[in-house]
Image (cartoon, rainbow, N blue to C red):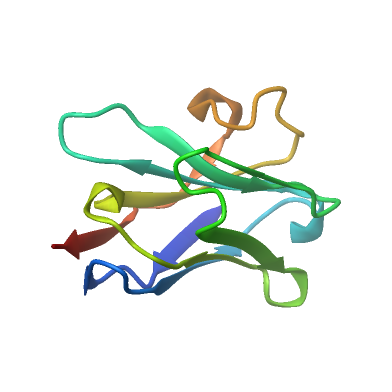
Length: 126
């Protein structure tokens, strides 16, 4: 059974930082071969891709978070991270970890990922 477990979501003031973690387990293949991503969904808005990292460690970012967020992975620990700096109120959302054994054609499309965590809530207050 595949499981993705997010943690690290908190309430933080504008300009603050958080690091989200996602621990993966139960994959059929080695974790390092999976494409991983972070998505977020704010109330009343569509789910959007935040950042992605491939099996070869190449990364992609949404324009809204580029230069503020950093996605990384520790394959030895089966863990995905999202370092979030200079947080803004518009970053408030539920953040989800996603994974797939295939490299996505479009990294920021939710249907590209077969496995999802339950989410962790990030609230940025002004």
